[in-house]
Structure formats: C-alpha cells, structure tokens
Amino acid sequence: MDDTMTDALDDDLRLRDPGAGSTEPRGPHVPDALAAVPFGAWVFGLLALARLIWFVRETELGPSPGPDVLLAYASGIVPAVVAVLLPAVLLLRHPDAWTTARTLLLGTVLLAVVEGMRVLSPALQPVFEQVTPGSDETPYLVPLSLFYSFVQGLLATFAVANIGLGLAQSRRYLDRSGTIVILFIGGAVAVVAAAARVITISRLPFDEIPMTPTVAVYLASAIVIGVLSIAAWGYLAASSARGVRAGEDPQTGWIFAAVGAWSILAAFVVGAVANLAEPTPATQGLFTTLGQGISVAHTLGYLGLLVAFLLGMPSVEPLAVEPDDGDPDEDGLDALETAEPDTPDGQGAAPPDPVA
Image (cartoon, rainbow, N blue to C red):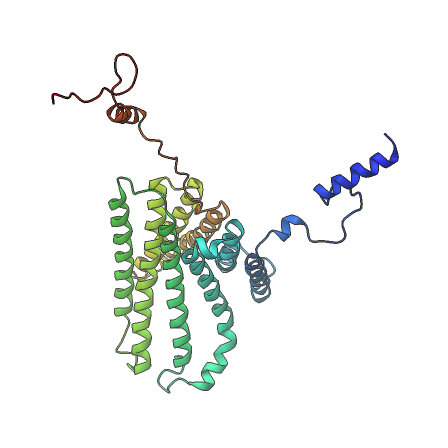
C-alpha cells in the first residue's frame, strides 16, 4: 500500500472519529474520574475536610491521652465530619439527587448546615452577649444565644426527619409482615426517651432557680427540642427498618442505615433514662461506662449512615417493567371467536339462507 492510500485511509478514519489516528499526547487536564464528580460533592467534601482540620486544631489530646480521652475525641470528630460529608457522598453516588431524591438531599444538606452553625456558635457568643445580655439573676442565659440554639436544634430535627421521609419516598416495594411491630417498637422507644427527658427537666430544683421569663423559655425549648429530636430519630429508624424488611436495594446499605439510626435512638433512650437516676460513689463506675457506651453508639450510628450512602442507598433507578404481551391462550380464543366460518370447499363464508 503506497503513502497516498495510507493518507486517504487516515483522513477517512479521522472524519469518522476525530480522536482516532492521533498520537499526540493530551495536554494538562483533570483526570476523568475526578472530572465526573458533581460540583456539589466537591463543595461538601471540601467543607468536611475543613471541619476535620478545624476540629483537630481546636481540640487538644494532651501528651499522653488515655482510652477515655481518645474515645471522647472520636465521638466528637466522627459525627461532626460525617454530618458534613453525607451530602457529598449522596451526590457522588446519585449525581441527579437534586431531582430524584430531593427530600433526602435536603435533609443531608440541613444536617451539614447545623454542623456549620455549631462551629460558628463560640465565635458569635460575644456578639449575642453584647446585643442581648443576660439578666442579673441568670447572666449565663443570653436570650439571643438561646434563640440561636433553638433554631439549631429545630433545623437538626427537621434534617433528620427529612432523611427519614426521603428514604420512605425512595422505596419501591410494599411493606411485608411485621411492619406494625417495627412501628410500635420505634414509637414506644421514642415515647420512653421523650418522657424520661421531660421528667428529668421537671425534677430540677426550681426553688433554687429564679423563674424568670428567660428561664421559662429555656426550659420549654429544651423540652420541645428534646422530644422532637427523639421523634425524628425514631422516624428515621422505623423508615430504614421498614426498607430492610421490604428488601429494598441495595440491601446492605439499608441494613447499615437501620443499624446506624437505631444505634443513635438507643443512645438517646439510655441517656434519657440514665439521667433519671442520681449517681453515687458506688454506681459512679456504672454511669461512666454508660456514658462511654452512649458515645460509642452515637459514633457508630453516624458511621452506619455514611457507609449506607457509600453503598448507594437508596436505589433511585426505576424498576424495569416487562411489556404485557397478553395471554396467548386468550388471544387465540379471541381470534377463534372473531373469525368467520369457512365453507366446506374453502371459498369463504356461506351465503345467507334465503328461506331465513
């Protein structure tokens, strides 16, 4: 084959595929795997990294931290970073979550916003004290700071509830038997935890506390936020458990989400019930162990949710519906009923009887 024919073939190949036949290296570019990451995932991923760096800089472990210090450190850093990382992971696995899982994405984004408010709280405290200083009876209760904490707790509750609602909306299979039991257990646990929290607040020494309007608002908001928060986590736990029972995809992701949500709900219950008892020198070790168990359950709960989203939960792809070709037996029967009878000689339908 001469050079003229070779050049003609190369030109024809380039017309069909502009990238074919070119041996020149590509210039500097972002790797394709990184370029495919959605912009929102990059934003929340970088914010999670900034939260990690901020926590490490603001928290000191000391020269020789013991197991208790390391446990407290882990129980603080893991939920803080995971709360900001959840929307990044969700967008990474579902780039179209803005349209296919909007409620779920809204819940994860609000959870990240709440963590941002928690970071800004110490820096805003002097401003709150200057704008709305506390009264002489309760200088430690700053009205604007209490309002900020109330909004933060309300947003956190709304975020968790939206995550639970988003999981419920993404389900594709009907509930199986045993769903009522799951709902009953989740509701009962949430009611016990909420009641224990209310009783704990009601047992405060009100005769030693000046009942000012600020104190009354503070106690009422603590009860409201506490009850709503426990109810939201109970709803998320029930929603994820129902998905596991129904066999939603990916099954492993739903299992991790259920374990994580129930772990956090259990931490709320144990903490609320433990606050009803007063520790003594004999039971101080037990209360210390319970506190560590609550921290571990809280940490594992957030890790469970992170792993669940990493595994691609929930599946937002529509189920494949097989075309309904109909029953061949029924089609054949219809054809026989509508067909005209043939004459014995095969010439078509018989003419009408003139006598009739």
